[in-house]
Amino acid sequence: MEIYREWLRDHNVSFQETPFGLLFRWQGGNFVIEKDPKDKSYLQLYMPSISEVTSANKEHILTIMNEVNNQIKCVKAVLKENDVWLEIEMFIDSTPVVEDFFGRLLDILIGARLLFHLKEMGER
Image: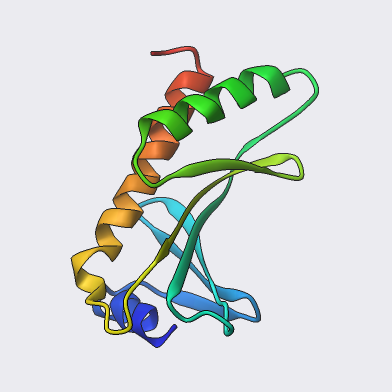
């Protein structure tokens, strides 16, 4: 987790440490880096609660989630209770250069959220 704390500090991003990981905001989005003490070589980066699912919109939302999963590299749109979350989960090597990939992962999630919302509003 220290490598992500350093990246956030280096980019002047404030963060909150919680028992399950780091919470922070980046370019208008909320993010979570989940801590997994059993597997330090696995990065779990989430953009939580980007949309709410109701019985009225569930079919539409599931279709959009599938489209995002098929169109955006690395991203998984998943349902957690009644919310849509975007996730990137990946293995990293034992000496990662976070600067080489972390900003890009955040941008990918932001792009996926934009695509999701455009489709949710009916735009293609």
